[in-house]
Length: 263
View 1 (cartoon, rainbow, N blue to C red):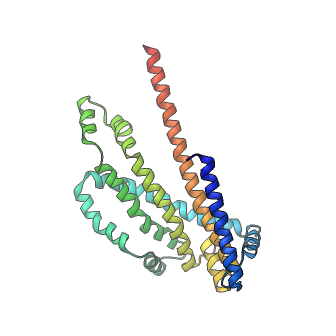
View 2: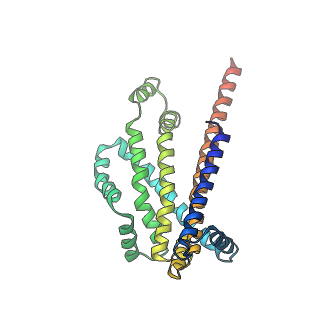
View 3: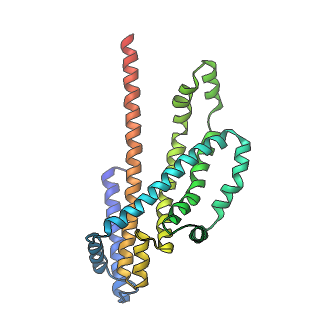
């Protein structure tokens, strides 16, 4: 399917969803329960022009980015170790299994008892996102072709070259899949944590305050902002991955050209 056709399908699907919402809102005709699109978009414009809007947005973004960086680093390092060492994998298995089975709300509520409201989103996002990243890397290491390592040993390839030219390229798809799934989860956990703990600034905090005041249109406006943050985060991640792939291809092509010129 070409890009134009795909974009048209997405456009008409989005318009159909908006029309469906508008139709249901008009039939219900109770703004507190389901406001129509007009009040929602007016509230969205009002929020975007408010003086505290950048602070709330930035607070949520920074919490999500900090969580993401910590998860990616720790999950990748421990995943590499766990994939190569069965003892480490067995030691971490109960911890990872427990985190996978624990409800998000339980983690947030317990973290709220243990930490301040500003630290709860970071801690909760880490506990929920770490198993995703760790398991992806661990499975990726176990799926590495053993013949590749034997070939590197046969040709006496240095450990550094073996890591950068054999192991890491093979693990790249697992790393990308784990990072993307983790990033999508982090936004939801961070905002849910903000809703329950209500720190001074944050998208979730504003949603909770609007809900208390029965401002359904404002709640939905912040929800749209949360959806936009998730979508933009995914687009940014895909753009970075695409840039890295293109850069790597360019570097490899230049190396090949340089080798060919020698002959």
